[in-house]
Image (cartoon, rainbow, N blue to C red; front, top):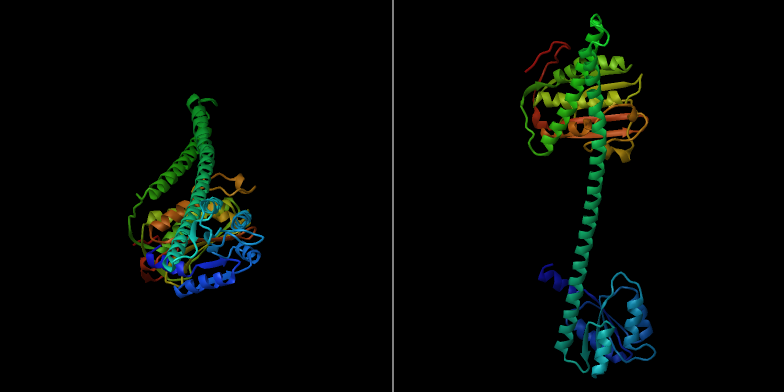
Length: 409
């Protein structure tokens, strides 16, 4: 806090004067008001004063020591025993000047001791000192509480990260072992000619399985390396002018058409706008879009539909949108699905392989372009994921490209 802020807080502080002699309350309150303290209250009845103090509404109490029924020591003891959010500072204001009275007052918890009759400057300065300590203590406590909250949150984040790491290691171990087992098993059969020298067609089939498993293994490793590079700040773009329609059609039709047909799904590519030319990294855009289509394929039951389209945002941004009629994601699980190596648990998901890198890698790749990934989903209804590119990456519009023309910028 600045000195000005401290001064403002001091003169706005709530002060309670408790003294069984009403004229003493009136004099002290008048002096404080005249000095600029704006929230001063008096209580000539000790019981009433204690009830007011126990409300927790005061920053400072000026307290007489010798009062009927409840003396100063008992007043402090009862107040300290009462649970309030913050105990007020207490300054003793008494005509008793003996050493024992001072000892009792200060050992009971009073912060300072003023003897009547007092000098005006002494009253004002000691009140100011006590309030400054109280205010700084409060600010220090607020800072410490906020720091503890941040530490606790950071601890929870680290615990979540450790769990995600452990889950990833277990998951990736399974994902890597599956294609490795195929490669080792079938290559061993071929190498030892277990079906005899004439089973060439069978060996060729196994060689194709080995090739598929090797490519799957390579894709997993490449995803891990790509995500690691981006998170380490080493990601880069190989930019050129590319047609959005070409990217959408080539990714969907060439890479995924057969896979969707085998899964009994409909893949619809709907590009209603003229062909837009983007300034982007074509390979990385296709990779991000492939990840979205792969996820939609994986989590949409047979008979469902996946639609790929392009959209223009209100701010002029451009988006590739993938909409499916799949199992959907619960709102509380969306954060997990977007986290690296996150795996949203469901009976349907556990039937499919995956390292949990598809959505996080797609998001990282689009963010590398200065864009963003948005995701909305409803359990049992489906999911919509959009890769948004900023408006400045739209360089021009051209006439639609015939499907299959394969034109490139």
